[in-house]
Length: 146
Length: 128
Figure (spheres, chains in turn green, red):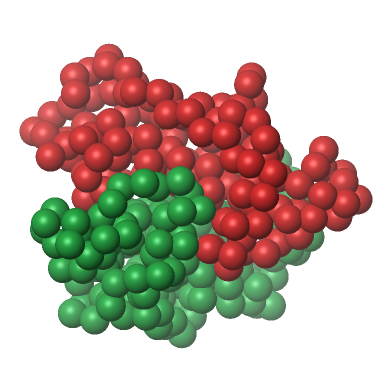
């Protein structure tokens, strides 16, 4: 039976995330970032940031609240027990800094089938409080045995 | 950075409790990452690293290669394949595929021993 692709194009409500200095530090420590710009406001400003910047891959933290409902949406129909995260792409724009409010929207970009596996591709766009794009994400989830 | 250049290798060994710290930092508490018994019950060798943690190491290695400014990393695309595990050294390597007008494309990957945990990755850099 072919994979149900009727949710292709579906978009989900925006999710707002307020970026905090201590959350950036917690994330930076967990991924072994030691650049002082992630921990010291003076160093961040010296380097030309508005405030303490988030490491690029912090995108997963502020995007999570938008991606969760998309991936678990019953109309998308992913069997979560058989799902693996197959691929990920981010394109970065304006840096994200402590104090920013980031709004992320997600949509189903594609659903397809290959070799008995379902490929569910989501796209997310995140913007800051000024409307500047901070990151664009492509999330590929692979489901075995569709 | 010129075509054919290798980027400096990044080596990092995630300790036994790293997946717990990454779970807290990222909000991803999937038990396959933090519960060894659960992971084995579902057929994995042990609890496994979060793929996005390993991707963060690839991001870090490539930003460092571009001079260390995180703004130099413009784009990163990866495929997650072999599973990463704690308590084993991750090595991130890469080679410049092309360079033009200040934009550098790096073919990059992450391995643990012989196991490629991130492959076919591509980083776009604008070194400062």
